[in-house]
Image 1 (cartoon, helix red, strand yellow):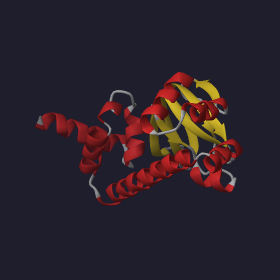
Image 2 (tube, rainbow, N blue to C red):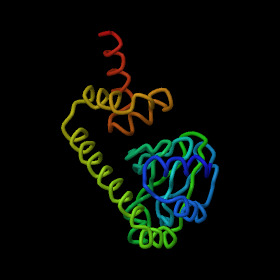
Image 3 (cartoon, rainbow, N blue to C red):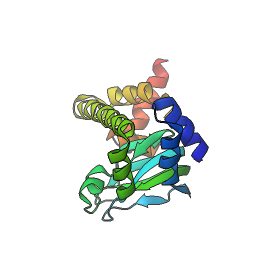
Length: 193
C-alpha cells in the first residue's frame, strides 16, 4: 500500500526520497470493507484520506433515506469533508467505501506540519485544491442546468470507468435524478445506438 503511494508521489511531485519517506512515515494504513464508513455525519473529520485501491463516496442523506452523492473518489485521489476538517466542526456528509478499499490517513496536525515544512507538498496540495474547485464548479453548472440526458452523458464521458463499478442507484444519487429517470435515459440511449 505504501509503495503504491510512494510511486504516486514520485510521479506527481518533485519531492525528495527523504521527504517521501517522512510523509509515508506519518500515514495510517487502513483496509475498509464495502459500505464501511470512514466518516459519519455529525462526527468531526480528523484525517486527510488518500485512496490507494478501491472507491469511496461522499454523500448526504435525505430525510426519506435517499442519498445525495457529492463525489466518488477512486484510486490515486484524495478526499475528506473539507469544512469539517478545516473548522473541526461536525461533518454534514458521510464518507464510506463503495467497494473494498485500501486507504492512507493523515491526522490533521501531522498533515498541517507536513505542509508547513515541505513547500513542494504545499504547492502540490494547492494544485489539487484548485483542480477540485474547477471540477466542482463544472459539476454544479451541469447539475443546475443540464437535462437528465445531458447529466448522464456528462457522467459517461467524464467517468467511463465507473459505470461498471457502481450500482445504478448511486449513479442516480450522484446525478440528482431518480432511478426511474436514469433507467429511462439509459434505455433511450441504448435504443438510439
